[in-house]
Length: 121
Image (cartoon, rainbow, N blue to C red):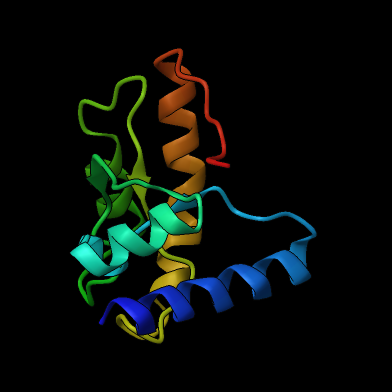
């Protein structure tokens, strides 16, 4: 519910801020599901929710570095947000390794297209 979502998000912000020294300003809803409770909590905590415009499907068991890079960069243009994952506790075992191996290809393709990569903050 709304109160639990607000409390969870507030605790997450505190942990991130203690670990990094910076308070996030953005919030990606888990699984891309922007519930009313999440949107209200984000607003109350001064966070801007965002989603992605493409993904590499790096969580799938059949994913390879080449397949992830191809999906993530197909028709990639400026202003897009690419969703990739850095853990595998919610995906195929070892999927983070596939993502890590795909990153150099994704970066090279973006740069070859004249795109500038930026961190969301």
